Amino acid sequence: MKKYNIVDYWNTRKNPCTKDVERFVKLTKLNLSFVKLQVSGCKKILDFGPGYGRVFSAYIGVKEVVGLDVTRQHEEKLIEESKKQKFLFKFICKKYEVDKLEFDDKEFDAVVSSQVFLHQPPDIIENIMKELIRVGKKVIVITYMDTKKNYDTIENYSKDNRYCFNYNYYKICKMNGWDIYEKHKSRNQIMFVYKERSHE
Image (tube, rainbow, N blue to C red; front, side):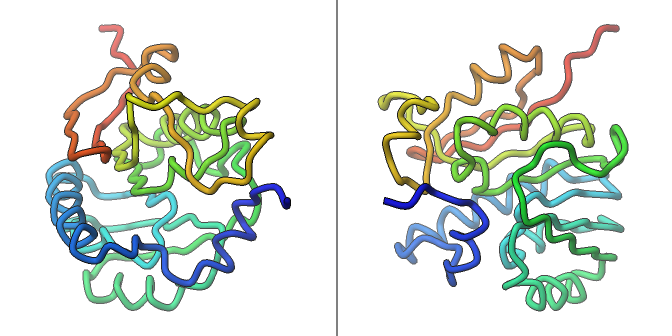
């Protein structure tokens, strides 16, 4: 069986949304409310894995958004949505796994990652979280986490061909000295913000 490859997977998956339309609409409303509140006052945002711009309507008052994704298949839709929301938009397609992002430290007022972390394999998830907090003053996360299931390890990953992974993000944040704010949960969907710990 072919090993999961992030770029290959997203270049062939036409619809980035769940097939459960009713649940998707309900979750999207919750997600938009959460993101809108968290980006209030932000001028420059990095949207890490924007898909087709599902949370763009939450960026009220934001001046500039950089969208970073592994596929170009939704680029036109993203540009169209950014024009509707009236913010400057730059799209970057990075067709390889994140090692070091080509942005300055704290370049963004916030990084938004909606439904992206759960698709990152165990060997890179922690580095991605580190890079996002390096380039952003805070990271706003919407993802899947089920504390009743075992968390993924590299060993599990190597045995399987899966596209979704389960992590204890709270534990990862604690291990790296990041503070978590605004935790919310809806079934197995979680929304939270993490920041670097203040040493004042």
